[in-house]
Image (cartoon, rainbow, N blue to C red; front, side, top):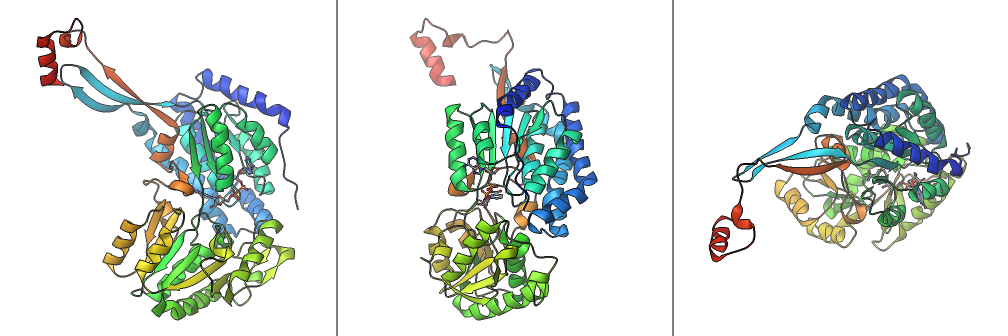
Length: 462
Ligand code: NAD
């Protein structure tokens, strides 16, 4: 296994100071600079696609199609969208006149030097997508990719300085010591994607400097299956959402709550679909990823003990392989139902009706995503109304993340803040409200000394 590359700890304060000087010099503010960097991201994702795909395969066997479509091109698509909209986003936003006083408008100004800390499961897209927002808003940026995927981290460290302005966009490689050292520095925004335990560490460090944070966290995203559904399509969409990237997706369906009358059928359909995806022996399938490392493989192997596999269940620790698995006879109090699974194991639990499913969801932390499968409009409307989640998808999984016109983010323990498209730009911008007044009109009654007459005028006009 490749050792995680890391930056010399002693270099970190200087590297941050250089970004601060670059920002203070005004270098990152012109739209021309922002455009150049966004073009750089697009070019890097295109020119270096093969190298990135290879690094992702070396790190955890990510299949090339998943690597390109869901990881490498995420940043490219976001950059293309930002380039198309940059002028519109950065234009002063007119609010309009306030009679007798003036006109107000809102300016977007960059925050300063931003820190982006990203995880290993989509290690390119989850670094580059927020970077697009930070650049579009005119910030200098420090990047910290995950050390858990060392080949990808090394590839990013190698290519980013070739395509982006090294004076204003820097990258630190490494794990806990390097991130801890970064968190001791002063940033103007911290954008963190990863698990909630580290989210708390980040927020605590940020509090010292009153630095705003965006936390893109995880959680147990439930998948509710009603009695009235097309089981074959439902199974197809659930199995894809769960087993893509071997279940290591923040919005993967974590567990299924299915109407008791359809449980057997759903489990059978999930098995058939999974065989269709990966054949009789998923270990030999080129389109099935591995668990990222031995520690996670061991953790997941233990979770298999929480129920009985309807299919799958094989573990090969040598290869960090866990078969795509559906687990039955799972108790709500069992270990697999406590923490986010983040692997290719899908517990399927039967419920009497969707009311029971809603009650189960509501006894737990607010999830990052919620999926509901039903042909009945009243059912999904009720589920959406009576539950809270970062996002949701009706009759599908994962795909709500694809619409860059909409915000993506968690709620409560699954995160705070949101990004994608314009929302990324807003996340890294300060909205400065400006009121512009003329010299002619004035509200004289507001000036002391106050009188009864002035008070009467104030009562009428304010
Ligand atoms: P990870 O282990 O790569 O950690 C994320 C980052 O935090 C890394 O850059 C790592 O170096 C840093 N880090 C780790 N420990 C630290 C510490 N003690 N102090 C400071 N920094 C530290 O990734 P992970 O957390 O295992 O990622 C998986 C989690 O991320 C899951 O919970 C998943 O749901 C969530 N996730 C959320 C989203 C989203 O968009 N909301 C996307 C992907 C993953």
